[in-house]
Length: 327
Image (cartoon, rainbow, N blue to C red; front, side, top):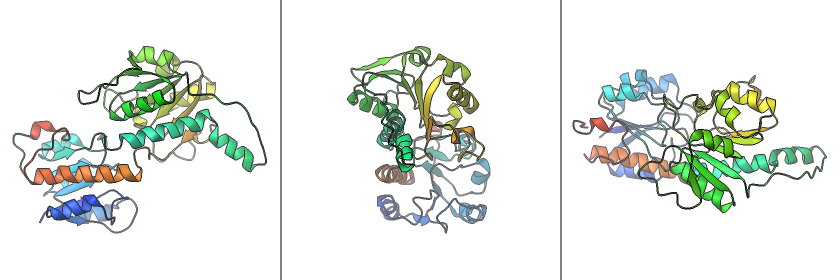
């Protein structure tokens, strides 16, 4: 029977449909002990026995792949793949699967939680009341403002739909995949430079690649409208963090909400931790309970399909392996 290493902390030792499916297909889950990040000792013990990995946000390095001689598939519960050494996996003829769109709705809900926390001064009002204050200042509305969605994939499209319901105008740039539904009326395409200049809020929904790393730098922030808000629930590496801090400190940007940072968690000396116009969350935008179950199930189905010699359409990153890949 094949073994599958369950790497994500929220899934280890946890029942669910994904585990039922794997069991029915003949897989034996490997659940290392503990509820935290996998230790080197855990990995050294489990990788040599693993035929498949169910991964999440943690890295899957070339060294880890080298320790797993039986490995045939890495299935990541999520759409991002920058933490997986795709070249090393491909060199070993290991299929790498992702679950595009499985957490898009969760991401979209979190974007608006972060955005409303900024615009409605939720955290500031809470702190003020707890300190004995009652400061009823007017806050900025969302209705009538323009949201710029950078990366209109599944999560970007889900954010755009919600923005329209809030009475916002929506412009978008980049990443219109063929399998993403037509965004429909109310969403206008723009070049990135034009989007930055006309948006009151900019929300990032791009993958981290060589082409997008550091895309939002001093020049990009300078192009944004004075007083604009910046939301990043994608990847910290898309942003030159020092340049964002500079723009926030100078007052060019009115605020930022960040679910992802350059270093996670941010170090104690990071200025983002002290800026009053910044709202932070711990890289959790795509992880509500429903999305977690959906991602785990879809990733498991990819593994099962491959084991049964069925190629999961639209999920395998190294598609070039298809003609010669075998379990």
